[in-house]
Length: 209
Image (tube, rainbow, N blue to C red; front, side, top):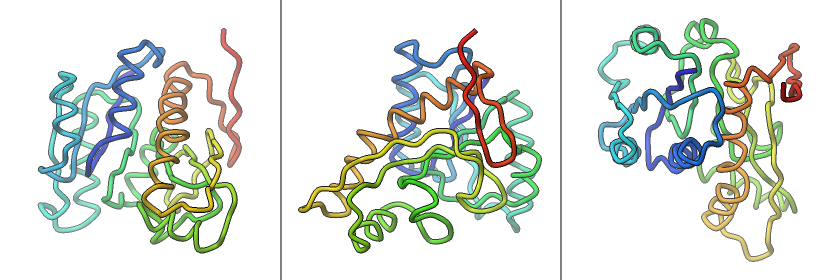
């Protein structure tokens, strides 16, 4: 399957996917494109070093979110994409796009959904909220994307311990290293192996053939 990774920033999760593909850990799929909403995203450098075709699609070049969604859909169809992965993509996709690509878009979120998710919970805000609440365990979630922000069916989750002296930045790094970079490539591989059975809000992982 052809995978498109959508990015806006540094691309650490993109790098985790690139590493996993190079190590033979993504079965039945390959990263065919990296699409950035930001022309200055360092993720584009990561794509270049890995010889992955990259494209830039800026939100401000389009009058409405709908127009942006149509342009993105056209691009994905043109390069024959089967799976869309949001890896730090900071542009909200319109409902029409989410509906068309239903169960074909996955996202990684830096908390154990349904905690610390939804509107306004992104980047360091998630970890600030977790520390403010005093939770002892946080983590990351890979889920399908629906019209509801962070509301799609959960594919994989991994817990990460919160330490007494954590800052949002330190916790963010630990969640990436111990959870995000492991479960995102795993979820992508499971999708490409056709091992995800979706029943409403429940995702069942099928055994290997």
